[in-house]
Length: 276
Image (tube, rainbow, N blue to C red; front, side, top):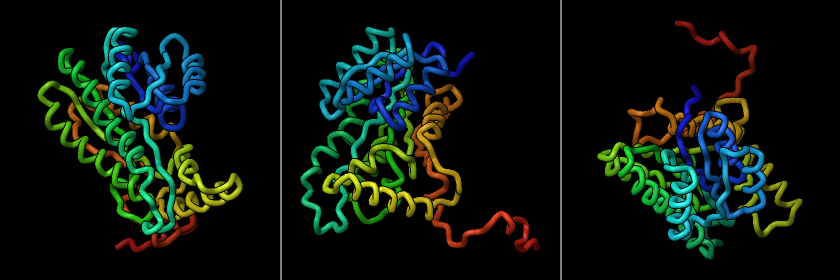
């Protein structure tokens, strides 16, 4: 039997990137999935590709009324809700210096990244509390764990998601609702390019390439992370394998938050260290 057979899931931000990879993984594991996103064309195309076990609902998670309607529609369409993946997020505009940040996108970033997660958790938990519990998964970022310069509002929003997740896990445990958090890092998604809004197409490519290279240099594992890697972690939290796990933050980042690489070794160096 597949891991999510008989379960119903919502994936916000489900039309692309990590969300789309998770939708595909959940469907493959037997779940029926509602794809929620502001991007109608991509969302409908993904739902069509997934077949009868997936439907699309256009939703802006920054509007709690739309999140409430999303949960209601899910229950009406598929008969329940067992997994809520609050994955939708936005990065905001990149500024090289905090002095240059006009904070014009503060409200939007906080509304999507924090309010959207809180509303999704609350609306889903109301149903789950009356129906035997469930799993809520929130997407943060290693930017919410590690301090650093740039995209200050984004970092603050993702740190808020982590703290909220732990608080919600404590309160909702009474109803057998597990609340956990993923912290992706160095995953190729459209989010990074979207932060370079003041650059032309060519400059955006240069900007993104430079950031990606810096991420690679800081990552202990050599292999590139993918949205599918994060989807696999989401599957763990969604499945009964994690039935005794709540209030946790799982970095999916190739070891980045463990510490920066200080010495690069080749394969020829393996096994030549101190053996005492």
